[in-house]
Length: 83
Image (cartoon, rainbow, N blue to C red; front, side, top):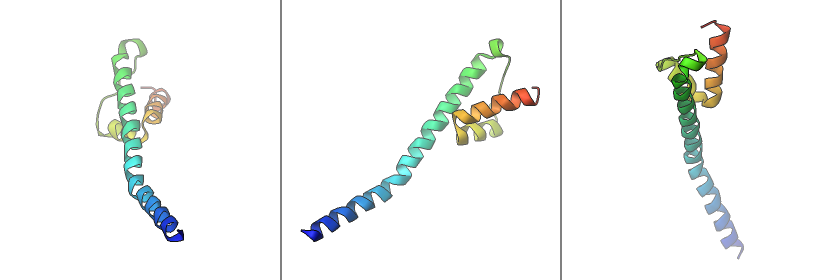
């Protein structure tokens, strides 16, 4: 009985370790998609907001890495730098 519990525990631990990168990758992908979506919406609202962010390597790297906080950082940088 104890061997079965140990085997089950080891199996559960292995499953957790194997699925951890998949869950982390899924979370990063969702954050990046939300960030890009909000960046596109912000660009569509350019006539109202006056902010236009080009989709270049730098903005894609910031938004792809940080997600929605990356868009917020771009907006703050836009106001601070006087763009």
